[in-house]
Amino acid sequence: MAENKGGEDKGEWHENYDELNNERITLKEVFAWCKAHSKYEEPRQLWRALSRFAYLYGYWTDRTEWSDWLMEAAYQRGDQDFLAELKSAYAWLTLLREGSQNLQKAEKLLLSAYNLSKNADPHLRNTIIINLATLYSRKKDFRKSENYFRESMQCRSRSKGEIDNFRNTRLEIRFLFYYGEDFYRRKDYVRAKKLYNQVIKKTKYINWLRLKVKAYERLARIAILENHLEDAEDILNTWYPVTNRNHDYRRLAFFERNYADLEFRKGNYKLSKRWALQALDKFKDLRMLIRSNRMEYLIERCNAHIN
Image (cartoon, rainbow, N blue to C red; front, side, top):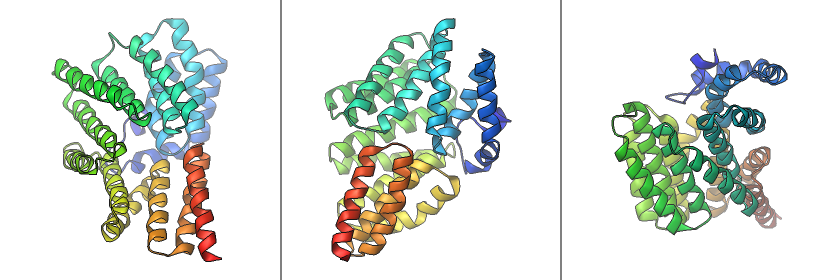
């Protein structure tokens, strides 16, 4: 069931993942049983089938708990490729939580994964390289991020024909999105928008709805920052329902953050506060403390206007 309904997201991803969600408690018990009985191959397969689902539905604690003991098991068995995959995935959640300590921890994990993956499957290798590029974007070390984005392009060029078209297109789209984020963080919104629009065009070839939604959410964010509030509202109203029905927990928090900022700029402070409170709950659940603090500050500003 996990392999049939899990794996990578595509299309309306909730159509498969909702069935996994209905069996979440049972799946957790299976993992616990595997750990207690020192199983390896079965939880290894389960982790690969369930990691994307756990990420999108906000079960980050489950995923990190599974990863923790599987990393130790992979290390003991000398399974370098899987160890690299686990470290990269663990690092990804850590860097998304932001803050200097999390970014330092993510950097250590990703550099270890990078060293372990030198002879790994080129798809995994390139995923780790893109993760490193994204890490340095978030650390605002744009020289390093540029170097890793360049290495990603070179890696994809060298491995032409070794990766099937579906996974290769996903790699390309993911590269474009996070390269766009790199320019977004540099406040070069012109180049960022160009790359996000490329993402939107390319997602149709493999029905990767989630990255299309992410790109639109980021375009809405830029529209708010540039004070194009009607454009931002149109994008949010179109894509928030898609994110909601598909249960992308973290992306929902960002949509709600955007709605809160949008309504604040329009002077609708009570509505802004309502959206900010919804975003705050999700950021707290995911232990994204910097984002939580920003929402609390926005709520304070709303209260000051309301009072």
